[in-house]
Length: 139
Image (cartoon, rainbow, N blue to C red; front, side, top):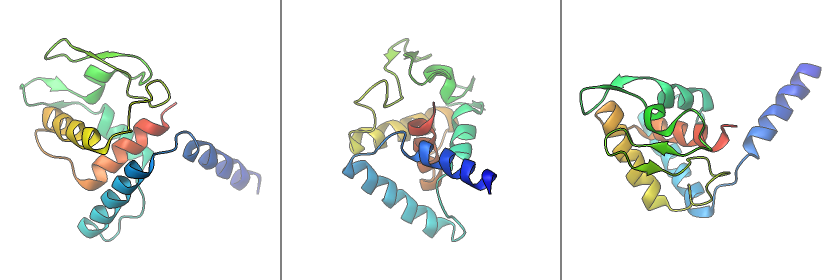
């Protein structure tokens, strides 16, 4: 019983970490619907899957080993640096940067670009939802 209560408290604290605006919540619902169409066994987006996608290294579009962490760092509340352009990247964490995840069009653009940079392909609906879930809940 104590384990169940503890697990419930952890889940509650994670889900309360950041509240998406209405447009972003609608986008996440759309991603969820697409993910269910692509995989009938899909249930929910996963922090753990998002973390793996965000931190795993791949031979990217420039032919070099890269991950999302390469530019964004492991500390999502810190600024990063684009390794290709040397431009400073504002923090990804919405708690450190209130502009993050406020504009669906911008989120779609950057998910598309970053998946192509790292994975050399567009991300699936599930992958995108998992990554957003990871970023907004990472402490």
